[in-house]
Amino acid sequence: MVRSRANDSPPRLRFVLTGTFHSLNRGDSSMQLAAVRSLRRHWPDAQIAIHTPHPLDDQELYDDCEIVACSRRRPIRALAAVVTACLWRASRGLLPLPTELKSYRDASVVIDLSGDGLTETFGWRCPVSHTVPLLLAHLLRTPFCLMAQTIGPFSRFEFRFRWILKRAAFITVRDDETLRYLSGWRLACPLEMTADLSFLLEPIPRAEARHLLEALGGYDPSRPLVGITPSNLHNVRSARWYGDAALSSRADLQAIAAACHALQREVGAQVLVIPHVFGPGENYDDRRAANALAALLEPSLHPLVIQEVLTPSQLKGLIGCCDLFIGMRMHAAVAAVSQAIPTLTLTYSRKFGGLMDRVGMQEFSLDCTRVSPDELCRQVHDIWAARERIAATLRERLTNDILPAAERNLTNLSKHLPACPKNDFGA
Image (cartoon, rainbow, N blue to C red; front, side, top):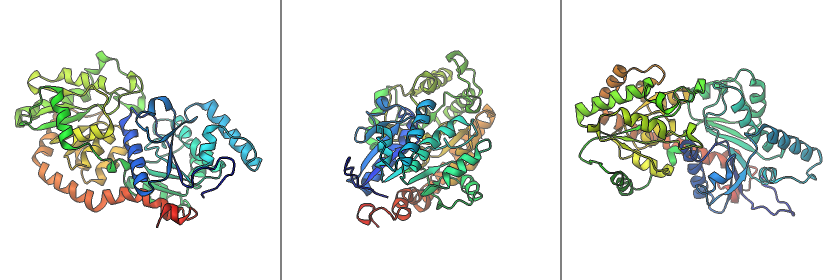
């Protein structure tokens, strides 16, 4: 509900976005930028605030938004924020609030973009931290929604997540498995399948992307271009960090290198290695894996390796120049399939399966922890042979299903938040 306050006089319509980690993770920033641009397209005069654990780092990318430091990833600060919100509620709104809590209180709606943060698959700390903004919104009497996510499964703290989620204004999910899982909870709030918001992110123009390729040196436009996004994480479940020397011996990178050599022999392909996560810190920087992969490739492949920190739209534009794409980062794969690029994913979580099922490409998805060079070579051979059929299928799915579904994330704000003034949210 939009509220007016004499003391602060906030704008009539204010969106708070929360749930992402860091803008250098271009999956996070792809979702967030797509959300910001879509909100501005629907409601040009609205104020948008982004709550982030890394406000100084994120300010540059989200320069047209208000940036607010959030307490979500700092347990003591988060606990203090929850206690303060409880006291504010008990005082009937008389208690002064710090900046973060004022931002929640003054919001028309809080939009959670946690992606796959709300799951205990990788432990309980991450999903518990992701519920802090939702709890704060509830305590401060501001409606909140969860938008286009992969949610669950839960075990240890399922009661906490049920309690929070049933208080949402609405929930949209991006895969069938999440829809079935949450449907079993019989939540009171509306629940709908949509699609990942990053499908809506616009790439840079093709000419600008070609210029970036040429600036790398050695780009040959006459050869098929194979894009690859490796991950610095070999197995997210075990949270093991690999040193540079160990990276080159990883089985997944060895398999990718073998597939690249096979494509060179069969079709004369050139390889473009595209990191999609640049930090924070070297453990999160996929350029380490990109350089390790490039070192495994024969010089005749003339591998092009992105070293510059590019924006999400620049990365999507580069991926759109590829004839085939191999991705170990989900939102890099989204950038490919959203431009009808035949794509093979090497997966470490069920979110990849949901994506590939949705676009009808589930046969081209392999477990990165078990993939062998022979298996990956067979897969890239098959996907190359079927590339025209795959591209046509992707275009049809995008037009008739996925892009309209991604847009419904935004129209749900009007549909499920009728308490907001009609002249603000529109029909």
